[in-house]
Length: 380
Image 1 (tube, rainbow, N blue to C red):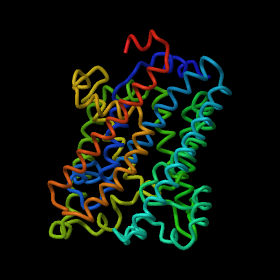
Image 2 (image 1 turned 120 degrees about the horizontal axis):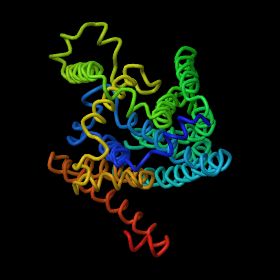
Image 3 (image 1 turned 90 degrees about the horizontal axis):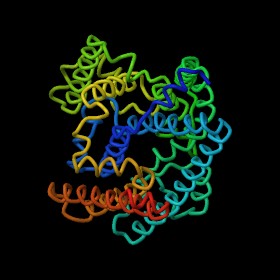
Image 4 (image 1 turned 30 degrees about the vertical axis):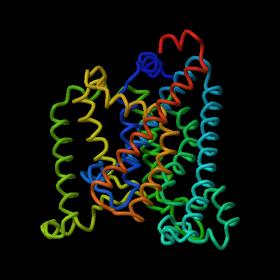
């Protein structure tokens, strides 16, 4: 392991901003998955090229590199790798349980004629005719019901990460370069994962691996805190790019304004191009992260604000909160399409979902403390 990597891992302290970002991402995924919801107009995807998925994958890569990199430093790489593969199994188990309950719930609702159109809306059109076939294909990740795509993506990304971590701990720059090269090769040769019968995954793991490795690279090299801190001109460029991306995105949403965009922008830039992680999405996310870390240092007093603490808690328990959010988004969608889809109803459904996700996060955190040593419970 490189001495500089050892020093960076050993010096890392708890950073609430990571969990805040994961919390924001899980909340954003929840409201983004409820169609015709006024609240999802406030999420990141409406103001630039990147979105909640970009936040999610990068921060998970950063956090996994820190947690398991330090474990490799203290207990050896083999132990760290086995623990990551254990995490992969938990992700897969969560996906399978969620998949089975999710499709069963959707099929039941559709069969009761409450909202039969949701079968096609949620991308499981064959569930009533061939339930066993859909289930088997789901177990081998060849089905992709709506709203499970991000969790599905995390399974191969996490399975790949032990190999990336081995390189990051020894040759971080070379590992990142190889990841970037693989990203461009996947885009050029159109490598990707497919669902039955011949469709692409919503998120191509061969491309999205670069964002996760990039998060790990920032973690083990400490580049975010050292290399770019004293570059005011870079902040100006990042800010200009963010403003331009926001202007383009907002103008694309308006037919009256989109006519003023050059054809090269209209045809060459699509904020919805997330399958193969378009380069301008990566640049937008990096610019956003750079400005955000500059404006909000790790010791910022605002991170102690009670509402943010709730979001941070959701980030700490992101897997459970994400799974609950999938069901809540389905329930919210069902409520809105079977009732009065008023703005006040949309806001109420979203706020109720946030409250439920937060309650789950706090309960799981409390439950973990009860299973820990008495000294830990007393400090909590």
